[in-house]
Length: 209
Length: 228
Image 1 (cartoon, rainbow over the protein chains, first blue to last red):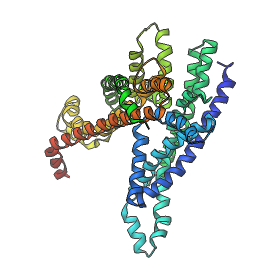
Image 2: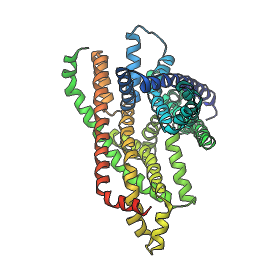
Image 3: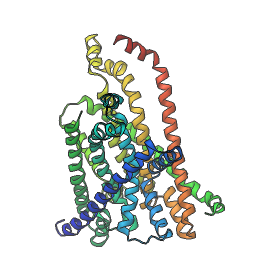
């Protein structure tokens, strides 16, 4: 178990790197699409709704296959690492739209009305009143989303990204030690995801309104 | 895109879809039979040893990827002397996963029922079992339905990961056709549509059950409101 630790640690870094980049990108995608979903023209809204339903209704493995086959077709030749990032960012983006939208809707309409009654123009009342509250409300679910993305990143082993699960699986077939590798693999995931779950609970308690 | 090819390949995708449906429904039913009672038990128990053990099980399930759980079932079951064919290895992995989430669903619905309800029933002299049976369950069960529908669609998506084993469900069937014909665009679109249709059918069914349950419990719910 100690012999394989350096390899596993390196793979863990790949997993974390992919997940962090993907979540950062998915927050950007999510924010943009939420804007379109709530303010855009009818066709644009429906495009976003279709995108969200598609990301949530089709297995992540199929998304990964789609990105893996279609990016080269579109003339984008990037390595497996970035293919994985694109796939996870798009999946995460679909979920992020719903997270942002739910947090914005959950802020009572009274808040905006009060801000307008106090004479704030619509743009300012959105920026100064609605947005700060919506952002703090979306932080706990976003932390959860990061945990989900970390778990989904294990699926990138099918397109031979050298992340944690792929490396562990290879180690099993090289050394024929099953139990030790599986225990170490499980523990590593539990540690990261556990930290994130604690963080999410902490944020939820701190930002509770 | 070659639509003709999709039609042509349908007879070969169809068994994959059927297997996916079989896997999901079997796993869902078994996981419900295990997870929901355990969730109620978890809510009833304090933080004793059993409660803690259930918590760690839920943490283990929620903290590791489904792929790792599938590998674990694949490697560890034979080592424990349990030899199953791939279908049942897949079922074991999916049930292990889904039961963990369903414990949380049942526990959540259970503790969301107002505390005063149980206290009131106890004050009226109902036994604990009668309280559960006639007061808590009728309110908790409808609340479980929406998250259970969510869990069912999660399960459908998780079942695609079983393609790493020798289980010819929808994703693996489509992959096999891709590697023979290299018509990836067609096969990706076809399987995406089939998965979407299955997930949509499940959510529609859940919505129908929810509406029916609300209609049936409508009288008692208005009575409940009038007291407040």
